[in-house]
Amino acid sequence: MFNDIGALELVALVVLAVLVFGPEKLPKMIQDVTRTIRKIREFSESAKADIREELGPEFKDFEFEDLNPKTFIRKQLDNDDLGLKEIRNGFDLKKEMAEVTDAVHGREAESASSSSTTSSASGGTVDMTKKREQLEPAERPPFDADAT
Image 1 (spheres, rainbow, N blue to C red):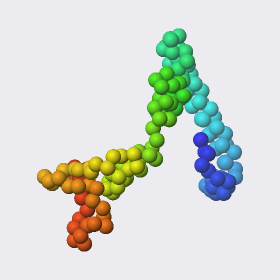
Image 2 (image 1 turned 180 degrees about the horizontal axis):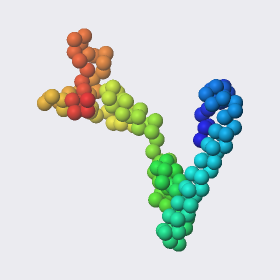
Image 3 (image 1 turned 60 degrees about the horizontal axis):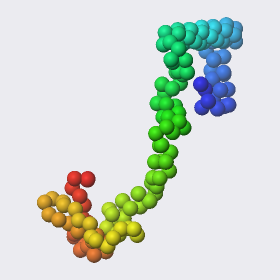
Image 4 (image 1 turned 180 degrees about the vertical axis):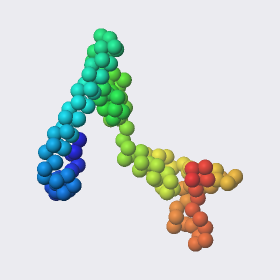
């Protein structure tokens, strides 16, 4: 719950609590807060038990933590009934990004053929393989108007 609070911050909170509540009232306040937290936890646990009881035996393995989207996705990826690990391992993001970058900059990828890639921009056909070095000083580089 308080994983991101450091030692210095904790000391500052204790000093602030002593200054605000005073040393006489601070133990009573701590007891009241812990009692309230304990009651909230008991209420939460009884509500979870009631929900599990109402769902029936087919949901006996149901965990409320599974309602967190990150936990749900992680659990489904570990399950791998759909073969998602094969898909994820077969996809090389660096290679795909390099191919896209080469296509955008007009360079030919190593595995691509030497045919030129063309794209229509503002009604005409623009040669996307034209290098930046070949552009005239006032000429703008080619781009796809739909992509920008």
